[in-house]
Length: 430
Ligand code: SF4
Ligand code: SF4
Image (cartoon, rainbow, N blue to C red; front, side, top):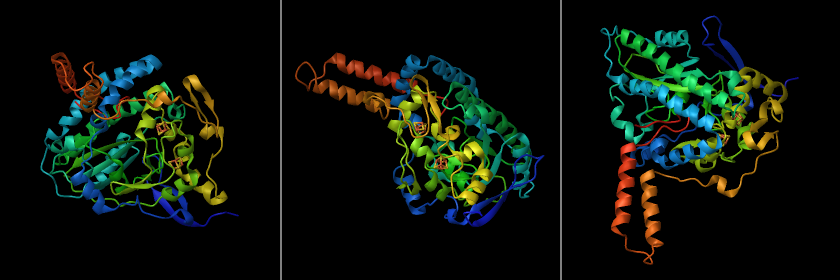
């Protein structure tokens, strides 16, 4: 006899033109909230008073550090990232100028939601949904670039290769991530062409160069819910979804957030929290900038990502990623348990020099493992300069002409160079 009562059945398009829709049950005790809990006023307040900024800008000091550490630790990974940066740089230029393309014809005035959705599936996107483009999630440095006359967001998810993802952390998985990004650009070029042919404008956000966080709009578009790992859990491929948004003025109907049971499921699961090698995930939710979420501890995550092929254990060990929503939910209803929890198959992973970690075992790192420069390069230069003054040979206070010249030179070089793409294109600024 089933251990849980079915609360509702969800039927969704498979995204594959050769397959019919997919139906799966959600247990009654997992139903809690459509999408994610949000305090709308708080989101507006933070956006207005403390605008978001790209991590490539806010944490630029760690980018140079990460490259240097990686060259010592895993030169193959650094070489892969370097190649990827070269391969995608012209695509980033295209993404940034996509809003300048002009429609081919006058719009018909018809609602084109389903035409765009079907085209997206046909091209190979696994998920396509529609929401308001929420400008509260724009990075401060990119606000001016997002066209204000494009009010709608087409949310598009592409599946990252399944087999390579199960090998996380590995160079193969990083390559799969880069391949997914390159494919996203190719598909979005075709989808933008289609939107222009309908008489509407389009502007692309992502991959690699984004206007801001995308998950809130994907949730609004009913394409998943936020996991403990801070990733969108898509009902189709869990955290294996690579996200991209196209802003448009096309006449579309917005989708609605859905309760897939993920909010409550995560409370029972907690696998990503327990398996994170850097102890960088929080077990409890907090309210942050108007959203209730598990907050990632950047300074504990990035040192692990840097040394272990982008890490990603929190993606790999997610049962929804590994087994899919339908088997996971059916198993929960039958047994009241989390599919795969406690198994090597789901929870085990290998970290290069440290070896294999089965369920229940985590690596230990020396304290200095987490020493990493935080903040912006320029802020760090000033801090280092102040430190130098405090410890100067004259007992502190006076800086020599030479010291000032050195600081000025370092500042100018940093500003001229600008923030760089982080790792496998987590973010990019130029
Ligand atoms: S990427 Fe690795 S270190 Fe960072 S949160 Fe995920 S599991 Fe933890
Ligand atoms: S591993 Fe478990 S807790 Fe973490 S995001 Fe996936 S379902 Fe949620």
